[in-house]
Amino acid sequence: MSEEKAILTIGDKQIELPVYTGTEGERAVDISKLYEEHGLMTFDPSLANTGLCRSTITFIDGEQGILRYRGIPLEEFANSKPNFIEVAWLLIFGTLPKEQEILDFRQMLTERALLHEGIRQHIELMPQGAPPMAILSAGINKMVCYYKRFLTLDDDDQFADAAAQLISQIRTIAAHSYRRSQGLPVMYPDPAMRYCANFLHMMFSLPYRQYEVAPEIEDAMNLLLILHADHEQNCSTATVRVVGSAQANLFASCASGVSALWGPLHGGANVKVMEMLESIYQGGLSPEECLEAAKDKANPFKLFGFGHRVYKNYDPRAKILKDSCDRVFAILKQKDPLLDVARKLEELALKDQYFIDRKLYPNVDFYSGILLRAIGIPTNMFTVLFAIGRLPGWIAHWKEQHDNPTRRIIRPRQLYVGNNQSHYVPVEER
Image (cartoon, rainbow, N blue to C red; front, side, top):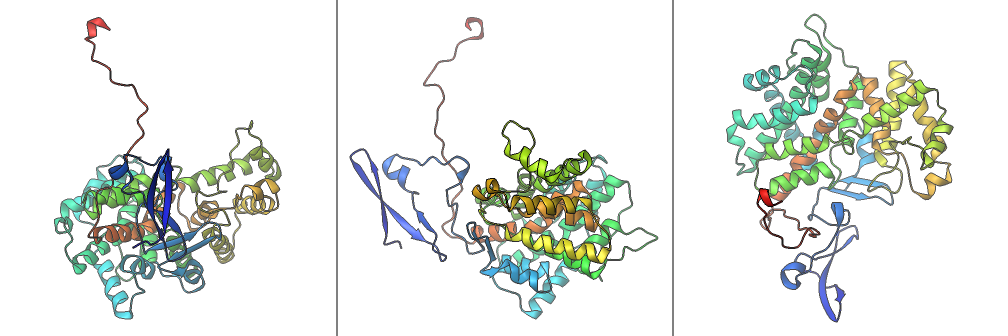
């Protein structure tokens, strides 16, 4: 219980409100009874300053540029041999998995990688040019039609089974959607391959030629997914919680997360970065000219990949991705002119007082698209990869909310500014 109180003064009335403190010192004023007891609501457009829940999953300090999963700094995952499945387990179940737990979970993923034929046929019936995110969302929703045992999840074993089903098959659906868009035959998952290598196999192998996954590329893919695995109450995660609060099943809730992630202001941001870098390179603009254009309010040019809603410092994910780009291009022994443009833009921006004063630093989207392109992922699949990475976070938040005995349906209020009471007028009198 909170011992500290905040005093809200409205006219001659004073209202005491509890103040809670998180484990990292964040403080929150509890206004949950404000309307019920005093007829007042708070006004917070886009919920930028509203705590949606208590959570033990992810901590972000935007001022310091800190991101931790279950208390573990993100950099510790990048500095060790990256393993997306291990991080997925950590997020969902709360602890790093023991050796037998991770072996068992990997086996579950292997056994569940193959799509039900009904889902595969459903993908085949989609138009060839269908957006991959539309196929992904529909495919996840379609799973419940064939795996009805997951409509209710009453115990930990059943939940682990459902989580494995989702995490394994999301990559199969994603790869199938890409193959469909290219008019290529389906490549089935290979049970001998690990998670990321298997995804790349399903994307790029041909019946007459196996795609060979370099260990460094597999590591880069693991790292990319880890960096996207969770990010507190972002748009798609909050959407999963809102839908899940209505007691919607895990699959429907995660499908709603895919739809939210589809938005260009959320999961599609790295596509905008790539389009911008390409236009800079093709248009012959210098990075210096681009920064000047970005500072000119009258200029329509927009500089994507800088600044973040939460981070007022360098996004820790961007630092890690920048280093990963260097390693991957060294292994591939190739260059990407867009990476050179990006590096120069960053170098100039970090010295420019305009960007320093506004705390506009590179974010995760600034380098993720370049890394995905180096791996061979086409631009229209960028957001799909983001969804694969973010899925464990969605599952973890759905579980945390589902396990909370005091959970209630999320139902915000509004400040009505429409007409006062008016009356219906028959059409002939209007």
